[in-house]
Image (cartoon, rainbow, N blue to C red; front, side, top):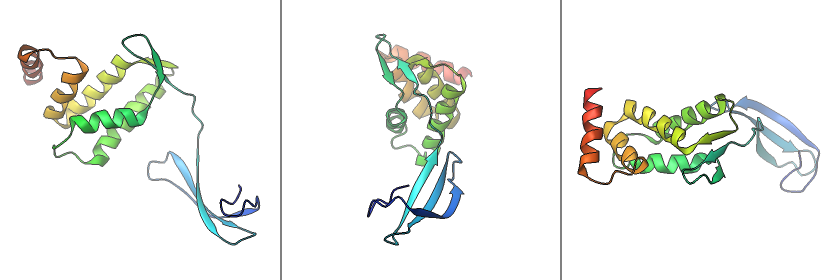
Length: 150
């Protein structure tokens, strides 16, 4: 590992530990040439997942985009950022565990609504209103009636 300060390739690992999510290894290193310390993270290289959108265009799965959408739905609700990040992790795990290289945007939206339904009904209705393109108050009433029946 090259030192980010002096470019020397001779570094020594001082400490290794898993991150809180157990998704990567945090390594504290020290450069043998300049003596400065720095941190690196080691993680499994994953194959990219392609999202097929409604218009049949394709783009790489973007966990930050999903996080932003969920945060918008949860805005001004008593939901912590940690809870929202956990929802994103759960959705990403479902997508990756499906072993498919392509997933539809509809499927990701359904996963998000399943998670939100368990956490906060208002956030669920907000997210589904954008996701399902509610056009009028009747669409909202149907979604709320369905939620109440469940």
